[in-house]
Image (cartoon, rainbow, N blue to C red; front, side):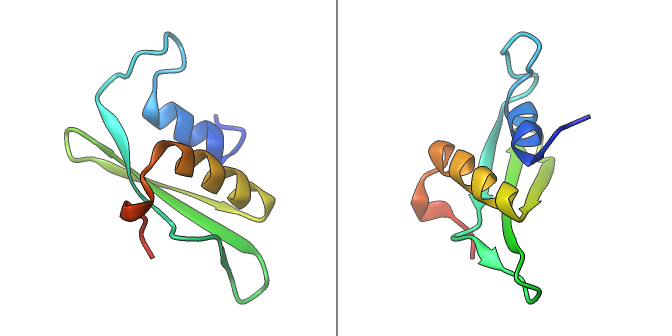
Length: 83
């Protein structure tokens, strides 16, 4: 079980047990910016793709959206962010 979206992202990118990737994976897209939903809640979305073609989307809301966005931007070039 993950405590938050950053934990989920970290687990998808590495095997937290020994630090080795189970299968090669990388962030394939990140929200171009933190969006604000109609109800005023912040939102961020990050897509992770594995070499096998499987993809996962990690989403965060509220203050957690800021943390996920910051962590994902550390690992992902700006020119590939999704809208």
